[in-house]
Image (cartoon, rainbow, N blue to C red; front, top):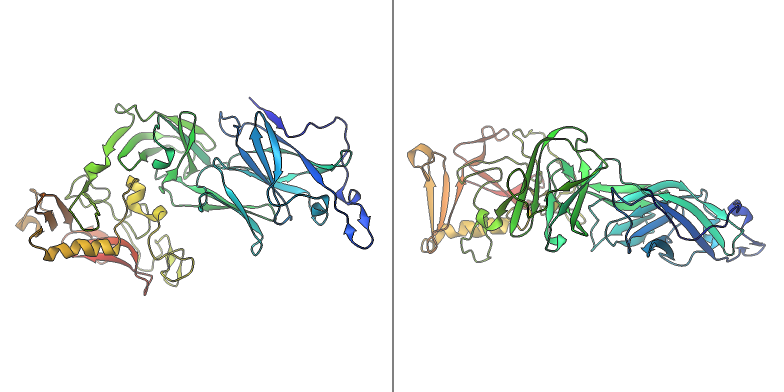
Length: 459
């Protein structure tokens, strides 16, 4: 059902006129100071089957107008307007070449800041962009009504989601929504990061499979992102993870359509084609390391200690089997022109970020790639023969738990806890993924002196 909410009731039959005729002139000072008010109609519900709620905010930006913006805040079935950065005057609109506006709504509270150097308004929540759905209306014309006092800016907003956005509602999340992340290799997190003075919006789009953060609704949480292949049947695997549990839902040959919201089974419904639950503690081993770091039992993509698992390029979330020597198959560019990760100072990163961490993408919670320091800490236990035992297994010559896979086993003597590193990641010609007698494992640390490399361990 469509709903229309009005900020101010408009009198019938009012005429609009051009702004040039509205601004009294002074021959010495130019346009005089005249206050202005707004009458903005907000049409439609804000999302699929979701009404506007008290506290919802719409941010309105006027094309060419620097610094100042309008906030529409929902309260008691109506909208109230406040100036976002300084009071509006009619003279603010006089220099503008076009009467166009852009409006944006986020599902959470955001901070709006104006960057005078880049001529744009930026959006953050807690210092980071909001990777969730957003609603917008851009390129919308507005008019002036001078039959009211003060003069009124008049417009109607029709807020809508980006066309390829999908939303997932999960009921039964009892703990804080902030403790859960949602993952699917066929969905990309998207953030609307800023609006420029020309009214255009800028997005930051993460890799497919990067984990989505959610926001609370009446009985659960909503997660949103961009579909990689909308309307195409695919084998979808969804994970919802907290620090203590990983919930997994598999839907083979499922078709998801862009612009829709899907209601998933509540978390308390498990088994029989619904959520399966894995305790995070069942996936890692505590070797009693000084740092408290716990190591996963298996490689990513493996079902047992001796499985090789999947092969990943550094900073990529999707496994693959071929790595081109000229970096042409690499997500983050080529030597001399790397994107995001260069290892140098400034805004570039020298450590793998959470959104590009394959372990975090797959498992969520506190799982992540090890740092170089954590690998060094583990290797140091090889010389501590009192507390630790390292055993080298050579496949058929010496088997680990009955497996012919070669590798190294590390055991904490006092507890008997063990992990096994199979010779996975070895490459026949150093470019084609294979396994056999050599093991290669990434760390999350870039080799800053030569940013085409990252630190890792091989044996």
